Length: 236
Image (cartoon, rainbow, N blue to C red; front, side, top):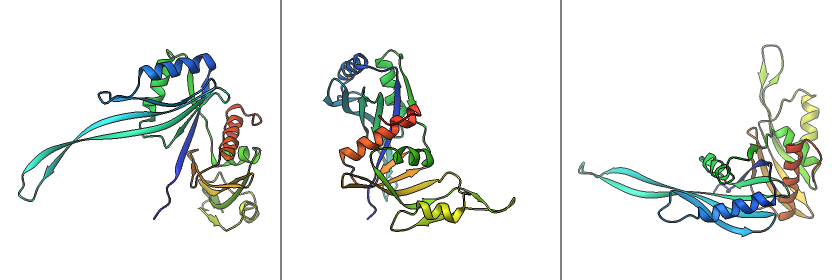
């Protein structure tokens, strides 16, 4: 059975402070998800510097079912898309977990609650920028698989390569490629922090997936890396 993964995405909120967080929590309570609504919020932990919750989207789907005799009937069922999120003033970020394909509706709703006075900016990242940021955060990263982009051998020939191993293979990949490796299209490995280990996968889209449950310490280190990528400075 294929192991499930948890996909994270981060967005920077500008400008953002505790007053805006309080206004967001109040607006989300007014937009509480109910049976009659097509979307809404279910709030969890609400603090002065952070709130967590779920954004629920409901779709009513009609499907025509035809039996063996050729008789058809319309069957109606309800589908729910649920996106877990955390909004923090300490990081000025929106963190979404396993975002739905209709994530834009959550972003629009947040902006509407704040009267469109906020910019919600996705944290732009590649495999290489993730590696650079994580190497400066409070954790250790070990890569066990690297899938490269196109590597030019000659003016007319290029190849893709996959490196894999049981230990950290980053140094061996760099040595073998002699600086020819473009930004990887996918990397797999693990993060280590205070004895805790979490398996991760990062793709060229910038999404980071946890293949095993991360500790709070590892999550904090990843959030610090996001801060660095957002500000091009050092992790907070």
